[in-house]
Image (cartoon, rainbow over all chains, first blue to last red; front, side, top):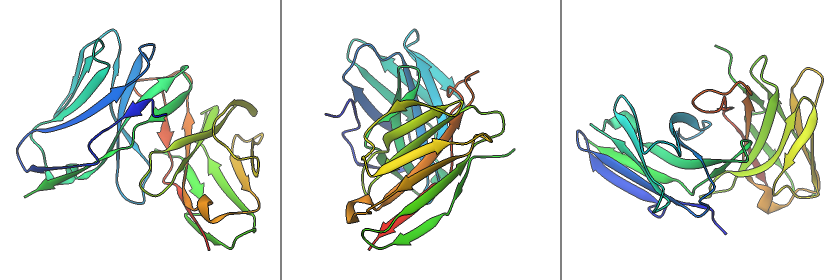
Length: 111
Length: 115
């Protein structure tokens, strides 16, 4: 059973607009969440993270929002740029050790 | 800055053969993780090592084994390969001092194709 779910396998956004990627999780005990970006033939690259004691974390064009009651987090990218086209994985840190990933969302930014 | 090095980048093997994947962590990183990503799937945790001892085990088949050596590099040994073993295998290393990403850094992966 999937503990971390990204229900949108793909998302297409116009350049300059906002990209919103969503992620749901099942275990309310999870307390640290991360977003990774992955290009083809490369390993995942860390983007941004959030602890469960916060509901928002911002880093430049990237903002992650956490809704603990809904067990939902989202990644906002604004403005979206062509270089943002990649697969985005939501992940939780389980037991402060291993990462548990969602299925990924392929984001395509159209010029 | 040095990254996590994985070798080989690509590997083609026949069914029932064996394969060895290598991972060289970032210097002074003491923990190594192996993940398997099948086509169209999310990365799945296989196994991890901390200070050369196995620290956690995930969905790793019994046909696979791994170890971490004294220089902290790790090898994933895969025997009796099956077609379903075709996947991207990622290694990550981590500095337990943490940081925003809990110190996780991924390598570029080894693409294993079993034919």
